[in-house]
Length: 352
Ligand code: AMP
Ligand code: MN
Ligand code: MN
Image (cartoon, rainbow, N blue to C red; front, side, top):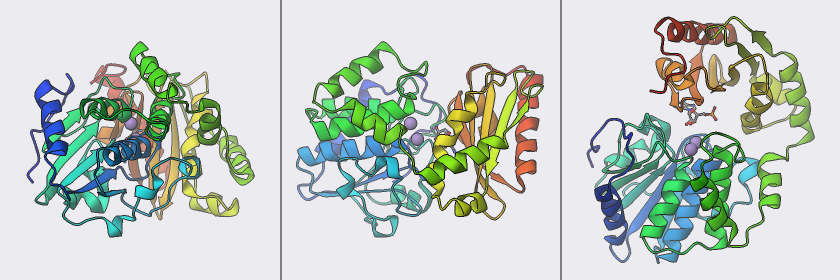
C-alpha cells in the first residue's frame, strides 16, 4: 500500500490513529497472515517490542505469524534468552505478501533493508515507533516521540487490543524499556516509565537475571577487545563548540583477532561516553571495506541526531547514528565538521 501521511509526529498518535491500528489487527481474516519487522542490527527495543507484541498477537489467536529483521539472521547474545524467539525467521523466508505488516523501532523504511518492499504489498502497513524523525512510512503510524521506547507504544496497543500482560510478553517489553532508557538512567525515564516497569515486574519477571544477561555479561575476548579499543580513544576538548568530543574505532580485524562477533561492539559506547571532559562521544565500527556503523551520544549540549541526519543517518537528540564511508579519519573529520556547522548555525543543543 502507499505510504501514509509523512512528516513529524511531535504530538504522538491521535485517537483516530489508535483506532485504525486496533481495527487493522481486529479486522484480520481468520487465517490472516501477519509479518513483524524490526530495524536492521536489532537492539533490545527493536527485538523486545517486536517479540513482546508478537506474543500478544498469539494470545489474540493470530496463528500465521512471523517476526524478522533485515540482514544476517543473527540474534545478539544478550537477547538469546528472550521469550518469543521461536517467532523469528530469516529475512529470506519472510512472507512476501502478508495481510498485515507491523514495523518496530524503525524511523524510516531504509532501516528495514531488503524487507522494505513488504510495505508496498496489498496488506496494511502499521508502524510502531518513537523516533521524532519518523517519516510516517506506514498506512497507520503509531509514532510517539515522547515515548522512552517503542515498547511503550507496543504496551499501549496491546492494552487497547485487550491483551493482558503475561511474563513472556513482560520480559520482552522490559528488555526493550530498560535498554532504551540505559537501565532507567536517561532523562526519558519518566514516572510513566517506572509505572510501566512496575506493571511488567508485577507479572513475576526477574529484573536481576534479565539485567545480568542483557547488560553485564560478555565473553572474555570482548573484555580484552574493549580494553584495546578504549586504549586508543581520543579526546578533543575543543570540538563540538568546546563541549568536547571523545571517539574511538574498531575494525573487522580487531574483531577477528579477538574472535568476536560485531554486535559485541554495541555496548562499547557506554564506557566511551563516561568521559567527563566530552559532551559528544562516538564509536566508529567497521562493517565492511570502507564502511562503518557510527554511534553518537551527547550528554545534552549537542543535538547528535542533527549531525547523524546530515550524514545520512538518524536517531534521537542524545543518541544517533549513521553509516560512514572512507577511512576512520575521514569519517571522524565529517563528524567534526558537522559539529562545527551545528555551532555556527546556533543549533547546538536545541531539540529539533
Ligand atoms: P546506536 O548508536 O546504533 O545504538 O543507535 C542510536 C540511535 O541512532 C538509534 O535510535 C538508532 O535508531 C539510530 N541510528 C543508528 N544508526 C542509524 C542509521 N544508520 N540510520 C538511521 N538511524 C540510525
Ligand atoms: Mn533501536
Ligand atoms: Mn527504540
